[in-house]
Image (cartoon, rainbow, N blue to C red; front, side):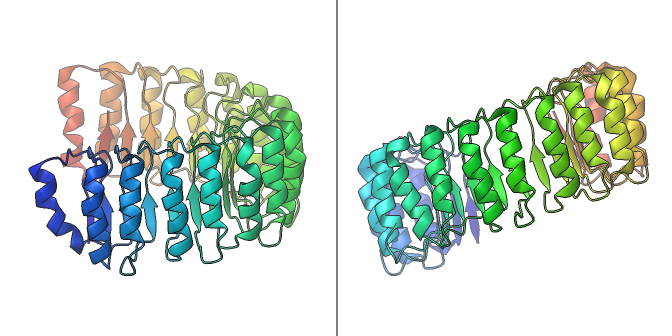
Length: 456
């Protein structure tokens, strides 16, 4: 059994009434429940007695160090079988890291620990690393995003990556390691004992200077299938180095996130080559890079390749206009692998979307999710979108948010949803305005069409 009470204020009698029932659940989620350190004594008792509990989520509660110290006493009980512990944004500091270190050393059954958004600092990170380095620790997933960890702790973190074969996923995003620190982490990943599958180093302050080491990791580590390095200013030079590693036959990368990496059209040639030749690559995120129409034209050449296996492309806020939509349309017309296209927050306008939809309507196109929000759309493109909704039964998600479609456009989309040939599951219309009369018609769609959801 699972318990999910997130965003409920569990104070006073509500909490006291809940405690006895906590012994029956396998997973418990109490995010944003106004819990404090005193509640952790009760939770520690539950951890000692509930032998079926494997997952506990306590994110966004003011537990503080004292609360975590109490929790760890319960977790260390031999009866506790917990595997996953989430403590995101619980106002923790280095003060609780000694207890967490003991927990990591003494609880080999613990496989996932999430500590994001806590000011642990480098001192706290070093303490945690001592527990991770214990041979009995078998942690598989560690999340320390936004933990105020600096390059000072990199040596210890590198030792963990180098000597902990059980570790499969690490998130160290939004910590300022800079080039030297990140290069050290990449060097440690070359060790035969490192088996990382997923690495998150977004906004860690590194540049193209660290990308040669990253390229070596990509070519030497077929186990690494997910790489998230957005908001690092690696630029076109860094992309060229990265792609060199990706293109090695030994690299098996599946997900690559490069949002806001200062990539321009000049860097798209290497990316297009990767798209067209790397058959393991399934997802590419380019959000916030000013590749513009010229860069998208180059990316589309990769999408036209019969060898591409890319399923998801994110290109929001890339400085695109309607001028690149013919290239996108031509790519969609021959590409049978792409399932998800996020291309909103660009100035595509009605004429661009109408052109793009020509490619979507191709029998070859298998798109399931199309996101066009904040693209300067009006009711003029809604007739074409309606044709896509009815004519492409594979399409399940359509986002037309932040548009000026008004009553006329909303009614056209509404009629398309009613069509039995429309299999749309989600229609996103955030911040899109129409009259109260049309609002009633739209809200009635969910009753008329089971399985359909209107999101406004």
